[in-house]
Length: 166
Image (cartoon, rainbow, N blue to C red; front, side):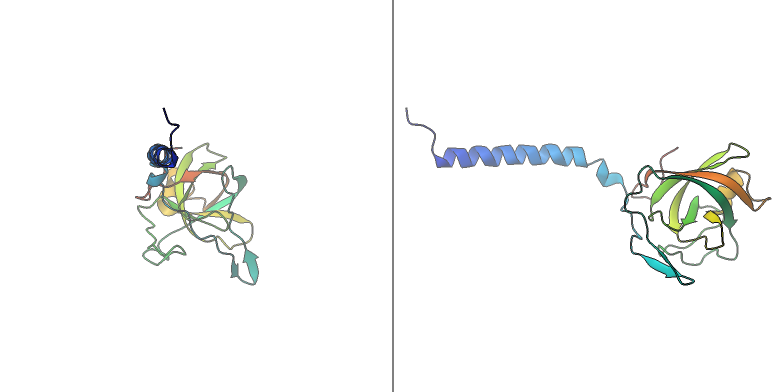
């Protein structure tokens, strides 16, 4: 019996590559549900340079949150989508990429909300995150206007812009 020739080995390699490709495609299909994160280019506001985080997984920080609403309603955000002050669970952050979902916890009340980053800001001194009015109401922030919060990155939104429950 003759040993297998080159044609056999090439065929075997092709079959293995196709099988591995199908296997990898099946594994990667869950990643296909995530929206692409964006807004990674450095930018300047009021003479200060900001560099968005490329390694945002595991991000966690405490600081002051505020909310923004009717004055910005309907205007384009830094990501290009229209701001919805009344129905969107969205937020502005200086360095988290667009489409990253973050849990925001009001440290006084213990209430949490999950928001999707779609804008840049806040640029008021000492502020960490600006929430949509809806998100701010969810954690009891509207009346006070500001609150001490913990912000924690959870993952990327899905392709429909929805965040996982956190």
